[in-house]
Image (cartoon, rainbow, N blue to C red; front, side, top):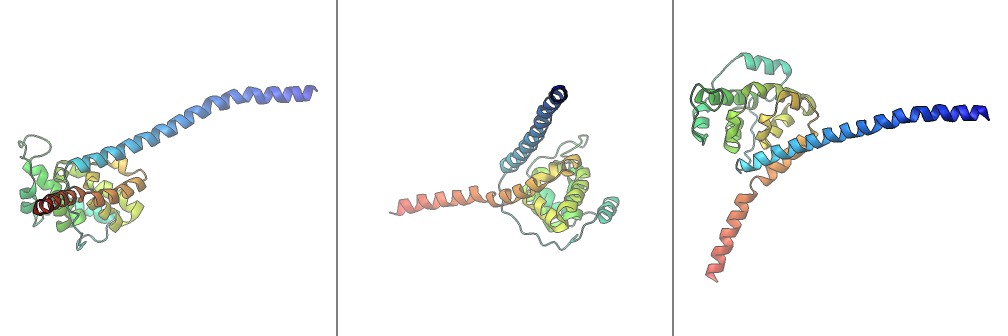
Length: 214
């Protein structure tokens, strides 16, 4: 009888600690999932608001294979893209004064040249036309983020993900280092839904014209 009593007392004395720790673990896990979901929603909303443009297929004539070594080597060498002038002409915003840290003609040129090295000239131009604000993002983050995504998905899949959703260029390396399956899935959603407003607008115009002819 005494043995059973002692056993029950010992098990009861341990249970408050286990019960006290478990809610904190669940709360922290749920908090991480919530912040990750909110970040994905913000990226999706920012991409949709910035404008809708047709998805331009990538030729992948340059930088078909990207590794850590090639990315670091690319960052050491600065080469101006032959499509730089066309990209700057497609930039719809006014350039900021030269003394500012982003949005100037110089920083936008640096950002485009970095995109051209990592994704190719035509692909970089397509990115700017889809998401002009990408030239305002920190170009120092482009290569590290692509490195992390390349480790997860391979070079071609990582490049295609960013081309579908250029809003990912605004992600910090510390965020890109995390599992990015959700970002990959979201890039397909963004790529598919981007042309929808134009399609709906054309359909509405045709409906109005057809109704007028009846």
